[in-house]
Image 1: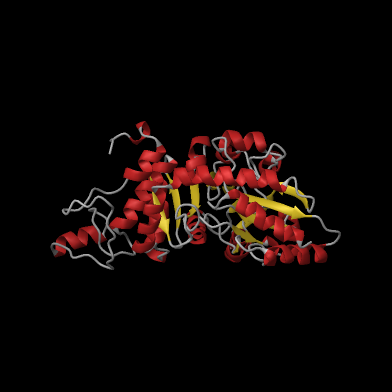
Image 2: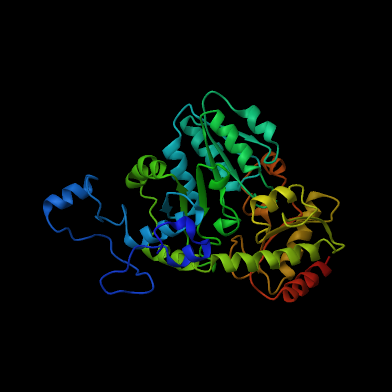
Length: 401
């Protein structure tokens, strides 16, 4: 490894960043399946458990395989450090527990993932954390929502499922002027397409379950940021609360990261072709994809996302009323053969979901409307299949209408 990671391309960092090999000289990073570690003597154990000396003690607190995955992801995001968690939602839980207390205020987008809205607006509200939800794309609303007790601005870009894109630099400026932090969920783009830290974000949130793994195998999450934030704010909470990523899951994600760049290139190319094709279908009222010139934030997305749109395409079916729209959406889903019905994304398989009844199904109707999630909306997470096969499958399904 080059000592200065900044001189290496992210594709190279994705292959080589990790702890040094063990005494056996393995070329592929080792999987350390152990819950505890033998200490050389009692005094060393005391120093390590007390934080006075580096060293592994117990796998809830650290594991070499997990460390390698954290190092690799931090290198890709261009941050000083990362901390791995059991899922993407546990990463958000860790972030909020580390940064927020009763009386603090957080600003989020209306358009965030349904579980994020429920966690921050509902669960943390029980403990006195105040929250405001604003338009993803209206910078003035973010600025107007700032209060003296605002501690965090949190956005995902692009959003799930409508792929709305926020101006990361503008939100970072608003947060920092208020003495707050900006966190960005980078799940859809990954660092292969977008590095929020370069635009001023303080924390980057990941669901490693998605593209970081890349084959729909394991659950994982992570937070990337400064060494101070990770070690002094987040790590102490992790040590007590235990949202720990298992060594096996960390190893799977570590291996997945090696092909992240080439996969995101392929996903983006296939998704763009699917989005362009969907725009031509008479049964489709609207297509949401940042790579399309018709997308409201197309220019911003291309500037922030390395000129690529990512893998997720959402589209609205033509329909006269919500109940009929839901029935039509279900009919299309049930007629698909190659495309798989699943709420995940970031898989080599193309997946379809109905957000209004799945990812956003637990929200109130008002919350769903604010997020723009209608009953006739379908989300396609484009995989790595042959595009004409996917188009033929969708053409058959749309033909059932």
